[in-house]
Amino acid sequence: MNILILGSGGREHALAWAVKQNPKCDRLIVAPGNAGTAMLAENAGIDILDGATVVTFCEENAVDFVIVGPEAPLAAGVADACRAAGLLTFGPSAAAARLEASKAFTKEICDTSGAPTAAWARFTEATPAKDYVREQGAPIVVKADGLAAGKGVIVAMTEAEAMAAIDDMFGGSLGAAGAEVVIEEFMAGEEASFFILTDGTHALPIGTAQDHKRVGDGDTGPNTGGMGAYSPAPVLTEALQKQAMDRIVLPTIAEMARRGTPYQGVLYAGLMIEDGEARLVEYNCRFGDPECQVLMMRLGAQALDLMLACAEGRLDQTQVNWAEDHALTVVMAAKGYPGAYQKGSEIRGLERMPEDSRHMVFHAGTVERDGRILANGGRVLNVTARGDTLEDARNRAYAMIDHLRWPEGFCRSDIGWRALAAK
Ligand code: AMP
Ligand code: GLY
Image (cartoon, rainbow, N blue to C red; front, side):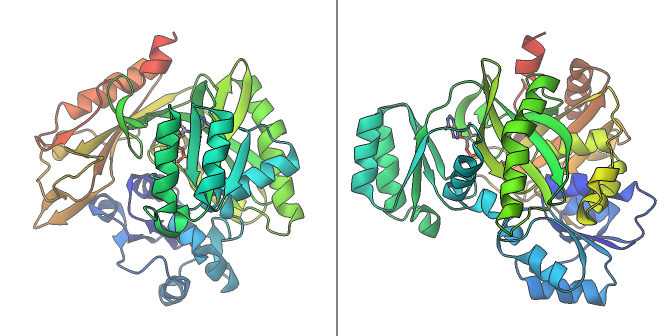
């Protein structure tokens, strides 16, 4: 079959890498893609936020299956447009993608379905929001309701920080995303990501992972889109996964169906674990980036079969074939990220890095010019390895990085520390 993947990050390179290994895949196109996806698929420079453009492209190229990677096209209704045109599509409708696109919507779903999450309130004006912060006290969390590219959440350790965040958001710093603000209880504990495929009725867990959000070693410095990840996440034991399915995920899927907006695609549940209890931090309507890279490394070619079963509504007849393995990815970023950084520096040494079923460099922000690979974003490469133990995967990934010649880049040196320290 001919398959189109929408997106341009490390997540989409990893999806393309897994899909390409499956013999069902004939032609593979990534739009817009990056220098990494160009090595194993065709890149197509189309506007992926415009449903009509995507549909026309699919018709002209005899595409049989569309996989939507990022949240922006999902929230813009691109999966709806594809399905309306009769295309088999992986990814939720715009109505279902509200689980990521509106924090208040997710909180309402939690309240209706009884899913454990932080206590919360919603505001459209600063004065009552500030009164609420004074009543509740710090620490407290201030969130822009809408999509804000990772900048919409302020975990305020003091009331003053919370007040400043409220002024910022209502002052328009995040545009329309901050027109409504959700304020919620600060949850302590350990965070982990849980990934579930659902066709709207049936649900199939497909793995756990942990990200590293802070830019610096020891989880210090500003927040980023994620500096590295590993799978599985030991904190999400079988018992906790079952608890999260029963109390959070299955009630959400049932409530979305009851409302007439069934959720189809991957549901990414961000969980906070404390004292044997899992509570929902947030949902995302897509695979995590870089969590997807470690999930794809472990799932390999079966990822396509799973996404097809999801899109075709037959997840009840599907299972995941697990290996007892571990995967870890280290993000190489341009110096300065998550603040200002330079684009265009040359990355050398990639040809010396092994690429096989245990080692893969996924490109996140790269471009090819005259045979050279140049950095073209903040997060640039995801150096990924699989091993029999987490330590083995970690050692393989960092050994790969030793081959790289890219002085303008950096990475964290401690990816995996939490799980490795717990041993
Ligand atoms: P989000 O953009 O919703 O992923 O939130 C970013 C990060 O903020 C999460 O990954 C958590 O680390 C943190 N966070 C969000 N909500 C809470 C909360 N209620 N309590 C503690 N930390 C939170
Ligand atoms: N790595 C976090 C995310 O994809 O939202």
